[in-house]
Image (cartoon, rainbow, N blue to C red; front, side, top):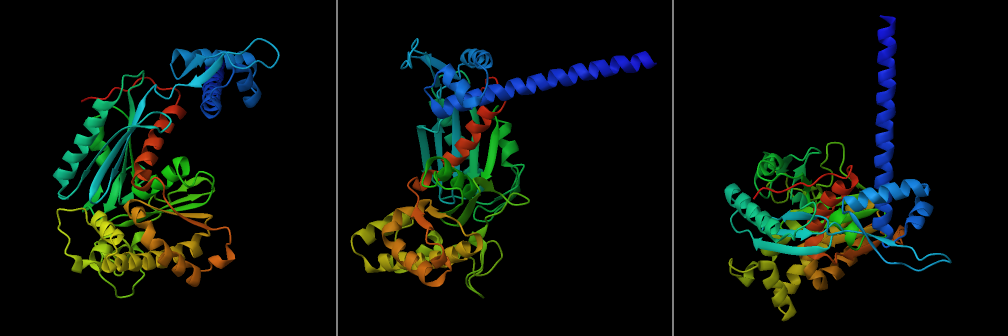
Length: 409
């Protein structure tokens, strides 16, 4: 009996040692890959210098990464006195990621490589918000992007979906009032059709991450991203980390009250910010323009404003003032370094920026924050799609170098 216990302890020790070796090995590989991605092109010697790993460890990990086609060799590079080194490059075309932004009046999908470069795009307007129609349109866009992906070692490494509503940490859509969705498991529905990882995220959270990774927020650690479409969503990057809150749905500031006893919102509250500072508000401010429902209202009002239409310009100015009212609350609550306004309304910057800035300058505490920046997104409508695409390919690269994940058509 005692001998049996000793054998079990030996086996446990061997298993623990094997597990630790596996963990260290994969940690080293991830570190080497991360260094190549960040500094490509780079030599083996420079990887060792940057990471502190010995040359033998770097060499063995590089061999594996070359076999897995996540990196490739090209060179030689410049010599520092000896033989000219062979340079290592990240193979961003080893796989592709799909990022989808489901808006209330559009669906946008992009295909990116493993660095976020857009390789394909598909979009369409949404006029019919019936559940079956949205899902059919969504699947159609995904299928078209899958078909557009070039041949690669890992194929489609995952699909990310940004939705305008509350999303739990496990990816379940809790409430998307502007789509009429409640407690909907979109992730499981897509996993039945596509044999690859599926990520569901709030569209403003994804937009914030898109801006942090590719857009106006790359150099800041505390960012508030405000997505203004038919509704308003807010994504928070605090201390360089996406802040989701306890249950995963922080940032629903489009539904904070800015008008006591105001209009009733679809969420059940009254006087919500998005009722006064979004595309649906713009529609009410410009009713006398009688724009055909067959046209994109935002684009048409922008066109009229460009032509000098006073009603169109006044509508944007009113929206800008209400947008500033909500931003005051956000500035005073979070003291961010940067506020980024994105999504479709960013196209109207010319008319909403001045009233927005006047409102925030005169009514908030940000006079004590001389370094605060209020910017409009340069990514405009692509922040969310790029953000969820980044979640997907970064997850792929941070995992223990996964095998190929084919997609079923």
